[in-house]
Length: 192
Image (tube, rainbow, N blue to C red; front, side, top):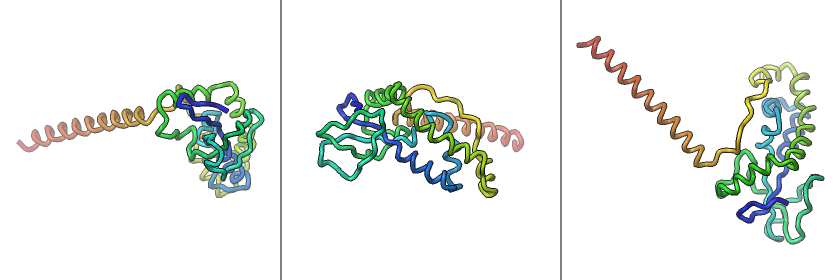
């Protein structure tokens, strides 16, 4: 099992993806958009759940199946669902932990696991694209078939997302102020 620099043992679990594929494979048109938006392994981030390995007795409510690529759970630890996915990392992780998770995601072992998951996605996706009920075809048209541009680099940290959002907000406010100034100047020339 993998270990973060902060000392947290973790692994990933594909249960959210398995549940999505089961529902979509059973003809639920509500899940067509989700399946259609999975083009490659990076699109699986929102369906790969982080599992913590905690001392026995911490929480024994989960008993997920382990993939053949997984290492065995150490005898003194138990798997506990963190409630987070690779798409939405826990806020308490520091930058080193986030970088470690980004490196793990790109590791050959993790990519092999993700490729196994894509092998499960492809037939369901093909069905969702090719064999739609008439009422589902409209939903299908709302979502792109070509893959989106690939993401580069590790996921943004909370601070980076906040900085990006603040920069966008400042740019928008500056554009609105400029437009208002132009409108005021036009208004003054029209009404001397």
